[in-house]
Length: 231
Image (cartoon, rainbow, N blue to C red; front, top):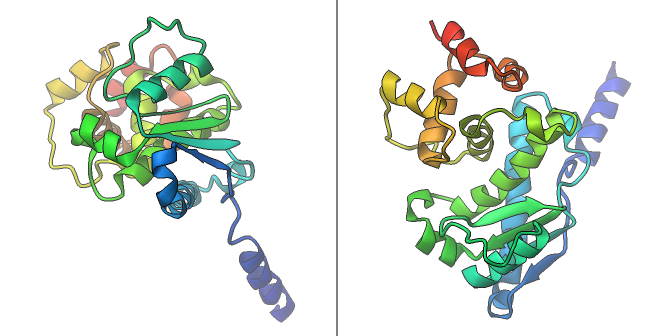
């Protein structure tokens, strides 16, 4: 018994950095003075996601990193240019002003916290930049839970709501929605408010187990199923 206890303690100590990776960070020249801060924020973002996975018994899914590099730009124009290149979009494609981060082809690409706050003031809260990084990794984690099937992530409100919940975004929001407002958003195919997505995701999470929703989200009748479970 004592030997097993020691082994357990040793395992805990050895695995304290499990799921936390030191990834090269590329910064715009003007941001180099804050390199240490950005390194710490990225570690904190990984710890945040790891905590979420432990809460849901998903630790086995974070043994591999989600990115090979982190890139933070001091210009929205430069960020947009890089995103178009990575995603192979036409130069004429316009990206929304609030579009602030993406994790594509194992590159976590973001704008600086200052530009993020300026362009998306509705998203600013405690540790908001850290949560932004966690949000993007959470999308990749979600896909990993689905064995790589990105098409099984469900409707926009659901997969964005999942990432919002995993990152702890808007957890202290005072927003409230009526039943009619909730179902109007759930049935919409137009991208909308992340704050509302977070509210709706947590609304259903109070009624339905997360694992069950993730499994059902891949089905075409997901919304109908939600209505039946919500009674």
